Image 1 (cartoon, rainbow, N blue to C red):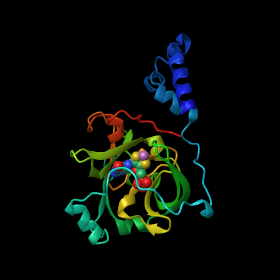
Image 2: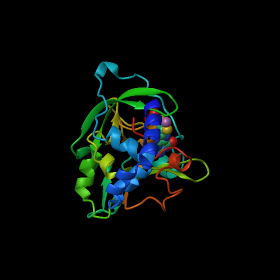
Image 3: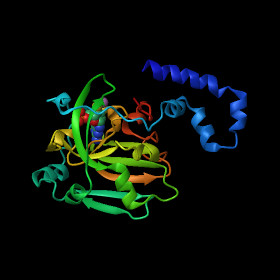
Image 4: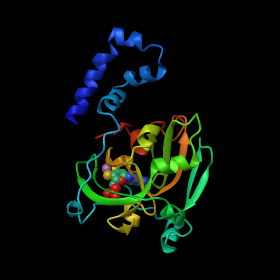
Length: 245
Ligand SMILES: Nc1nc2c(c(=O)[nH]1)N[C@H]1C(S)=C(S)[C@@H](COP(=O)(O)O)O[C@H]1N2
Ligand SMILES: [Mo]
């Protein structure tokens, strides 16, 4: 956190730096990135760094449950009762070939396993063994259109006032080699409390990015018109969109 704060102030100093500003003036993307401390954090820390992977012995026996309760509506309880056979993951938006996947289809795709640490912004961590479909591979399957910029994850749970949980990653983060659509935790299918049947697992970012109960993946050019417009449920309440650790 201290490092992030330090970088944030370095970014404010940079923002006032004339020569850099003018050299990059013609590049909208770079200018936009430099304009925000968040963006500079992103640039300096880099997003290709791999999260540490642990050994089987390091796995925490109990993986804490956090956030909203598992959905309690009949659509979800029916899915649970039927072992998620009727579950479908919709992948749509700015993609060449929108697709709908059953859980069986997702299980037949090439799987990745990672033993990584989940870090919640509230100050607890847990090491888990996660398996599932690499997100980048899935996005390759559907093909991104030229206007694709962000991948939005729409979840099945809500905060009790009807606001659905959602999250987003940019394309760079979404194709990170450890960004996973997790189907399993600790050698068992995900249980409802941990986001069954499909959740996002992003070990390079804080826990709130790892959306549980994912029903729909929507590729967009901008998330400005979605819910509060800040790219995620918690971001709409003031959390940073870029949650790299
Ligand atoms: N759909 C959904 N995803 C979510 C949340 C949530 O409330 N709803 N909470 C987030 C937060 S803050 C954390 S720390 C992790 C908790 O995951 P766990 O319950 O498997 O430990 O899920 C994240 N993903
Ligand atoms: Mo969290």
